[in-house]
Image 1 (tube, rainbow, N blue to C red):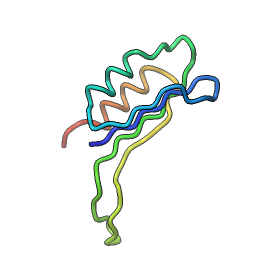
Image 2 (cartoon, rainbow, N blue to C red; image 1 turned 30 degrees about the vertical axis):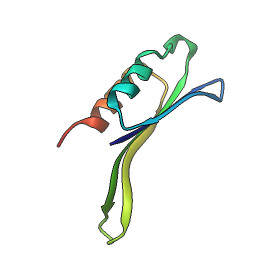
Image 3 (cartoon, helix red, strand yellow; image 1 turned 90 degrees about the horizontal axis):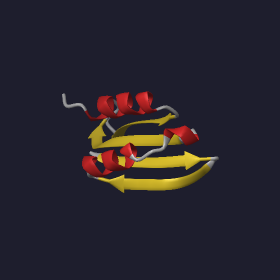
Image 4 (cartoon, rainbow, N blue to C red; image 1 turned 180 degrees about the vertical axis):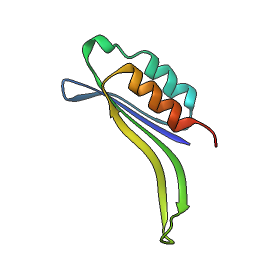
Length: 82
């Protein structure tokens, strides 16, 4: 799995992490100050697979979050095992 995390405040990107480490992303997500009303972009990529049309594509989940609860629910859903 690959993780991409971007933190935006006042329309500007102030933090960005791209890594394979779930622990590193979690440590960054825990430090967010939610009182400043940030927007967080989270993307979890699962690698390349052949889709139903026979093409090699990258499978991922992503989304923008403006509250702590939504971000944590998405992170748990994106990283759960089958």
